Length: 159
Image (tube, rainbow, N blue to C red; front, side, top):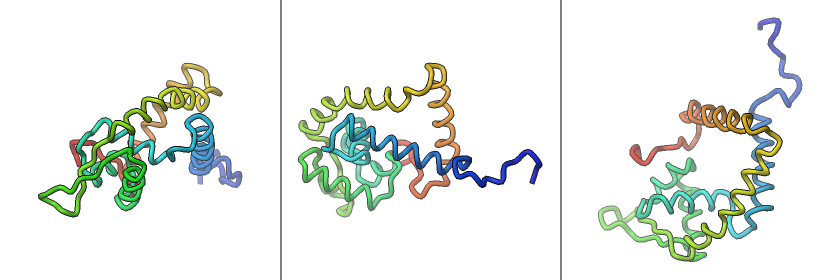
């Protein structure tokens, strides 16, 4: 081990621990700003569905970066809430084509101010240039480590 490398005795030197804490903080602020009608994962699924009408559940899970069983459960809950519809795909009866409902579209529209406040609050401790750098580095970290995930994020073209 190089002399300058930490032995990582302090838990707060572990990037994974800090990322977990950042996620806890992000979820807490999410509920403060967005209310409790949707969970963060439900919001992500619905937001991605709005941009990919007619996508199937497996592909929607992949472009959201969640596993397919979680995606199916989340889609079922969103359908129960009347925020999306699930239609059997005739060529693959095990798959469902998804469409956001007008109520789902309206909810997403109503949540835009909360999402903007969430982003501002989460990044508030950083200066403007630091916010840009943080987002660039966080994006790079996620993209470069994508294949290490249990549910690698897929682009629409790959799914």
